[in-house]
Amino acid sequence: KNFSNNGGGALYMFDSATAIFRGCGFYGNAIHNVYGNGGNDIFQVRAIASYYNCVFSDSSSAARGGAIYNNDCAPYFENCEFRNGQAVMGGAVYNDAASPIFNNCVFYKNYAGTGGVLYNLSGSQPKMLNCLVSDNQVSTSGTVAYNDQSTLEVINSTVTRNVSQTNSPGIFVNKNNSTLTIRNSILWANQLGLGPFPQSYEISNTTGSVTNLYNTLTQLYGTNGANNNLVGIKPRRVD
Image (cartoon, rainbow, N blue to C red; front, side, top):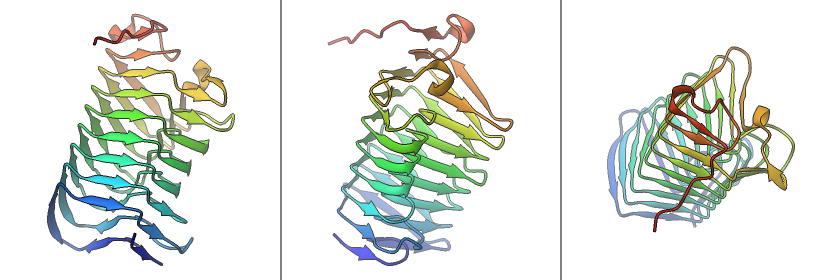
């Protein structure tokens, strides 16, 4: 429950700072200044950091990045949980010219005005591998991710029960020549208000942006059979 008026409620790493975190918990940290840099738990600029089996929980921000603000760096997260984070942009993570990798991570009940889980801009290239993205909310746009001039890859992941509180698109929003690639994943039971996203809102591409789907199951988006995708076929749980 630490706080800062600028960046990094718990930790600020800058210019080639190197760190490895294992089994750490970051709880209830905050940024109080709406004009602050952000990163309720960690603000890292050109740092070299890896996180294993860490929990980022119950952090709130008047700025950007509910848990993490990444700028010009490529941190690695494995077996980490991001839950109950809040921010204006990027309920869990805000990426500015950053390329983080999230492997086997959980994103649960994060909330933002824009980018309920991730807000990516300025050539960011994040990757989500083997992740569960569930029950996150946004008040305006990009329930899971808002991509602006960025490239996001989602691989072997499940995206479910995420909610947009307004009629703005979508689960993923791509603008200004962004690229979203989803492989071997499931997008199901995400909601626009009280109902499912219409196809045109489920994934939104504007201003030269594209979405590539391969071997993926969606509720509405895409064409059944194209690139081995399945559309509208309810997934079955195997106990």
